[in-house]
Image (cartoon, helix red, strand yellow):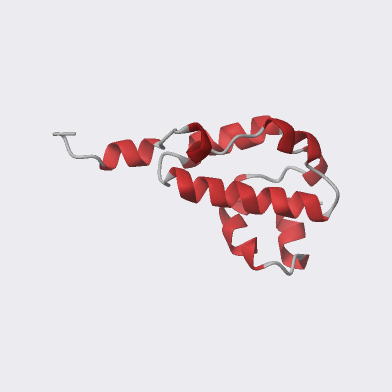
Length: 98
């Protein structure tokens, strides 16, 4: 089952945060790993804030948990905000004087 397949069936309101995941990948849920999250952070960081990215990844991790997946990812994944990182989109939004 892919994210797109699962989102249709997932009753959680966080499914709205998965629209970018649905567009990004056709990867099966059981194949999603830490690399996918890091790649997503980097790509999505061009247009979204760190807190938006973190919320989207949290929604994906919640979806994975509902189907019994993602335990290993939870061990190693660190949200951008927790690491003190800011996304490229936030850097671009800063004024030149900053």
